[in-house]
Length: 337
Image 1 (tube, rainbow, N blue to C red):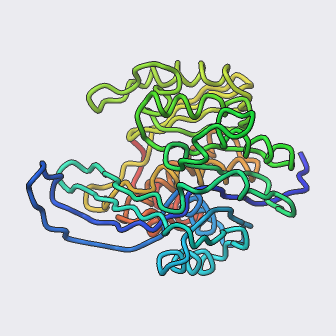
Image 2 (image 1 turned 90 degrees about the vertical axis):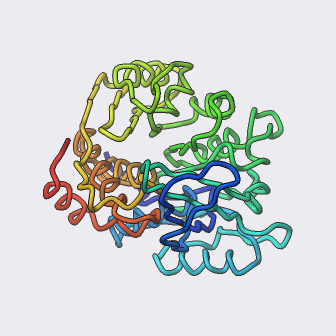
């Protein structure tokens, strides 16, 4: 199929991540020492855009979002420029500070915890999304659950996410929605109305369970068969051509053409692992890059796992990601689960 468009539009969350490594997550009233602290951009629109540019420095990426008129906002503008992301639609407001997230990585559990102040993200609305003149082919939009105005009803639509997805499709863009792990009921209420306006959906094991109203993770263990069943159910509820679900040990995929795949992830050595922050964004970037380039579902999943595995080498969301060739070579070196 010949496409007149090329590249990606990232929309939604731009924030500053204060990435911090701690020995363990403390109980209330306890203290722990931060052993490493790195300041980077964060949020789905930022992470995905940078990941795509790192996977392929020639790939077009443009972005839409809202940041504050403050040092943190200027830092994010500099990050967008540094990675070659077209950011004329990354708007600045003086009415709220830039969204800031403290992203903690526990060495004991390997788990991450995000504590944030939404700031300008809470004021992002469909009015900030103007697709006139955009040249990208695929919109990667997020994050429902952390943008108060977008989460609320917008005119006749159940929320602002639906409004933006409708506008994107009318402008000729294919659409993907990035979710964030919030309370199950809230996630389902926000995301289910979006399903009829999506071309792809890439989520984690918890999120697919929340959407489908099923238990897919129990005491930290992924039920792979339940994830596959939930993915089938959600595929039938929306307009997507494909639903992909990632988890620590692998991913499952169901497609409208009847394709179903279960694919293991990269075996990341313990001494290479630094943190999981941004791994989901890297997975989505790898998968959608492959689909953009006309790759098969299976090959696209391979790159998704490879880019996510590479991401795990850093406590930041993007520093571990490398070019397509380098991520695939790393995955072959480390091997597959």
